[in-house]
Image (cartoon, rainbow, N blue to C red; front, side, top):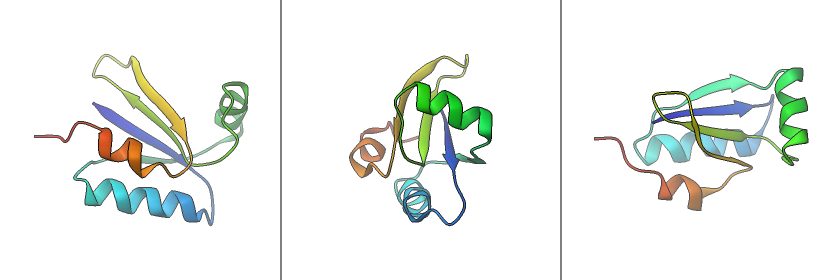
Length: 80
């Protein structure tokens, strides 16, 4: 499982998300959200950062959400 977190500058929700991921034992890839990412996110209905994209090893999207969602972070399978 791969977790990519698209973040923005001075984003308190993004910072809280990174802390929650680390506390839950997850590694993630924090990526600044570029204009092309933001366009795709808006088209998908996301209105806030961070945007999470969880993929499997084949690159298939397993889940995607936006905002600080500790419930979703806690529901992720903990890596062994």
